[in-house]
Image (cartoon, rainbow, N blue to C red; front, top):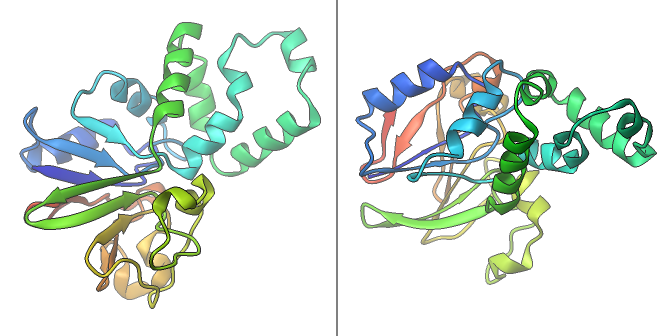
Length: 230
C-alpha cells in the first residue's frame, strides 16, 4: 500500500505515529511525505532524525526544507568567528526562514551533533521535488505545492525546483488529465470554510494539507483505495 501525507510542521510525533498505526501502516507499505515536516512545531527535528533511518518513507522536498538548506552554514559548529563571517545574504536567508517558523527547528538542530546535522543536510540535498507513482490502477504525481506555470506537454524536467515548492493553485486550475497530482503547501481552509480540516479533490488534483501547522489534525491518504485516516 502507498500512503501520502503533507505539511506536518513539527506536529506531535507520537500522534503522527499513532495515525500510522490506525491506518495499519507496516514495513510492507510505503509512505511519501509531501514536504514541510519542519518548522512551527516542537517535534520538527524528530521527523528529520526519524526519516534518516526509514527504508519505506520518502520525503518530497518542501519549501521549508528548502529554506533550511539555504541556511546550510548553520549545520556546522557555530562559533563567534563563524557567526561574524556570515554575509548579508546569509543573514537575509536566515531572517526569511525565521519569519516562517524556524524557531523549533533551529533549537532542535543544536541538540544534535555536527555529524547528525551533516547527515540531515545530505538527506535533504537528495530529496526529490516530485515523484511519480501508481497505485490502485491509477497514476499519481506527488509534489509539495503543485506545479507553477503548468503547461500541457511541458516536460517535468523543464520546470524549476521553485515551481514545485512555492505554487498556490486556484480551485479552477487543471493539471494532467490522466494523472492525479497530489500536493500540500496551501492549507485547505484558505480556500474556504467548507474545506476546513478536509482534503480538496478536483478533477485533476488533490490538496492534502489539512493545516497541521495551524493546529488541525493531518490527514493520511492511502492511494490504493483513496481511504483517508485522521
